Length: 279
Image (tube, rainbow, N blue to C red; front, side, top):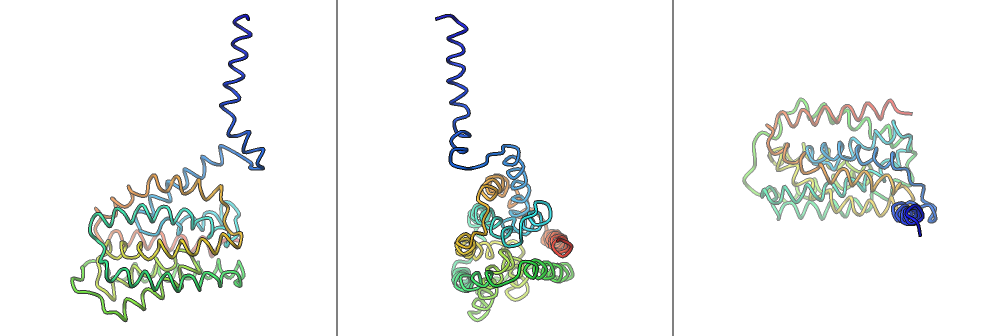
């Protein structure tokens, strides 16, 4: 056998090996577009950094972007972003735990209440009109941004345990909003913990993450069973988010509480305006 024939034979074999994953994916009916995968991984990395910075898993930014820039419905955007938020929040939570910013007794009670109520409220999504859900989330973010910007929050840190009624109330509210808006519970719980419990911004974010992870996992089951998760986009976003979420978390731990809070408010307001102005 001549060199050209041997080269062609091995070249063809290598080519088949190289593109085998794509060929298999096409046989399974999956439309693989590497440029789209790269786009969503890059977007996930940017959003994951912000998610680590603000302890929200990145869904706050991803949902308006998926709705306005990629044309996904509000339901699909929330379900797809929930995959990324769950992955990013889990990684971020480990870092906060290592920094000993969790108060296990208080946090577990709030997490249990949040998870239970989140299971119920996530079922209500099926009955809410897509436009109503989008506009409601946008208005909620804008109002909350004003509260966070002008409030003098997160600049001290409570040493005594949080009263049980406050733990239950915050957990219930966080779960209800997380089920409806994916990150609604995280957004309202951070300023609540700062005002009601006197937590620092960083400790409040750590506590909220512990509530966010189980509530998001339950919400994801509900969204997925209703067909509201675009899995290919979701997994690409999650890959990028997990890569840069730790960097955002370390930045949050190094920032002054007032600066971190005001950056948080700007992102909230921007996301709310984007949703209100969307189609």
